Structures are given as C-alpha cells and as structure tokens.
Image (cartoon, rainbow, N blue to C red; front, top):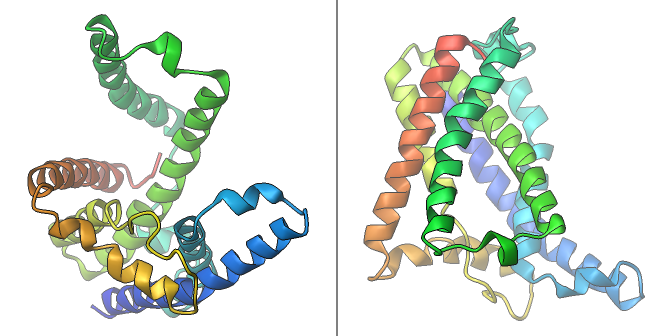
Length: 233
C-alpha cells in the first residue's frame, strides 16, 4: 500500500507541477515566435502546451519516484529479459493489426472511407511515428511502472483492475479547445478543472461508457499478457 500511496503522490505532483509549468512554456513559445524564432509555435493553443507540460512534469518527477520506491532494475517491477521478445512483438502486432486492417478494408469497400483522398505520405509518416512512440511510452508507464509497483502488494487482480481503470480514464482527461484564451498563472489549473467537463455532457454517456469499456478491456488484456510473460514486448 505504501507504493500505491507514493504513486498517488506522484500523480498529484505531476498535475500540479504541469499546471504551473504550462503558462511558462506557452509564454516562452510565444516570445520566440514573436522574435521570428520558430514562428510555427504561434499557432499552438495553450492546451497543447499544457499537455506537453504534463509530460515534462511526469518525466522530471520519475527519478524521485523510482528512488522512493527503491526501483533499481527491471526485476524490481517483476520484469525480466525476454528471450522471445521478437516473437512476442510480432504476435502482438499481428493480433492488433489484422483486425484493424480488416475493419479498414470493410469501410473502404462500403465507400465510408476513401483511402485515395484521405491518406498522404506526410500523414502516413505521422501515423507510423505515433504508432511506435505512443505505445512504447504507455506500455513502459502503465504496464511497466504502475502495474509493477502495484503487483508488490501481492494482489494480482486488484493491481490489473486499478491499472486498467487508470489507463482508460487518462485517455479522456482533455480540456476543450480554447479553454484559456487569455493565459494567466492559473490557466493550467483551469485546464485541469475543465478536463472533466466532457463527462457532464448529457449526450456523451453512452459513447463514453463504450469507449471506457473498450480501453479497460484492452488494458486488462495487455496487463495479463505482461504478467504471463514478465515482459512488455
């Protein structure tokens, strides 16, 4: 339970530090753009910088967290070198890609989606990049760190449940665009508060429930596989 409490402190500190850092990043970017340095930064709204600030905060506070929970090697997180890593990686890719490609083929055949007009080389590059980087970060954090620490309690299914619930909820914590049209020192905290505003939309509950259930199930499958193989691959 001590590890769970430290994780909770880590999450709260990440949000608080990120909320304070976001205005500084935004003002710094706007200053650079106004002086002709990286002018493309001017087109990003405050929420974009808020999300980056949370990421910076999470990374910066990771080392103190690992020190406090005494994690020195992957064995401390119930992970071990995987001699079958390439086989497992290929199997995971096929299990996820084949159904997705089949669904895409159906949408194209039914003329719901047009591949010719919707896909460009630059767009495809961004998709491939995100498909590699985002899962690597999410798996290392949720199934590697969070699940590994919770498993120390010896309560396997409760650890999987908490990790999967957190994984599904985090994907929907996003403030609406233009939440902070005038950026002040408290704008980051406004973004935190408005991250939950979508849950109050009366037209949203059915879609939200279906999406949360889907992400929760995916999170459970990934967590169970990670425990069975003692690997993230």
